[in-house]
Amino acid sequence: MSLGGLEVPIGPPAGDDPISAILLVLWLVIALPIIVVVVGIMLLTGIELVLLLAILPFAIGARVVFGRHWTVEVRRGFTPIHEERAGSWTASGVRIKELAREIESGNVPADTLTKLSAKQSAKQSAKQS
Image 1 (cartoon, rainbow, N blue to C red):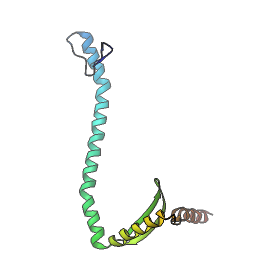
Image 2: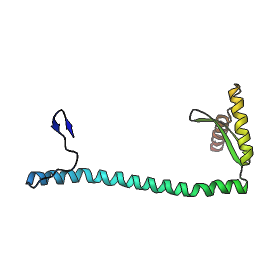
Image 3: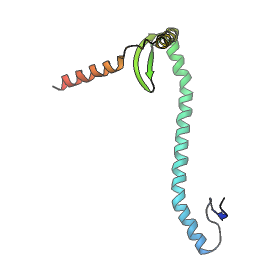
Image 4: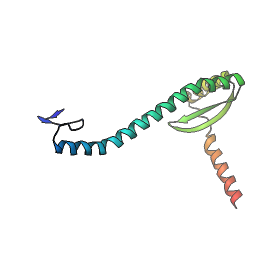
C-alpha cells in the first residue's frame, strides 16, 4: 500500500537482519493478542448465532403447537408503549393488523407499559416502607 509515494507496510516486518527480528517480535507482541481476541469474539458470536438459529424453529413450533399465548407489542421507535396478550398465532396476526389500522387512523393505543412500571415501582416502595 502506498500513500503519496511512501510505502506503508501492512503485514509483519520481513528481513534477516537484527532490527527486522526485533520489529517482528514487537509486531507479534502487539498484534497477536488483538488477533486472538478478535478471532475469539468472532468464533463465540458465530457459535451463539448457530445455536440460536438451531433452536428457533423448535421454539416457534412449540409455541404454535402447544397454544402458548402470543404478546403483541406496539413501539414508538425502539421504545415499547403498549403490550397485550393476543392468544393464538392466528389471533395475534389479526390483532396486529387491527392495531396497525388503528394507528394509521390516528388512534394510538393506551400506554400500558408506563402505567405498569409505575404500579410495580409503587408496590416495591410500599413493601420497603
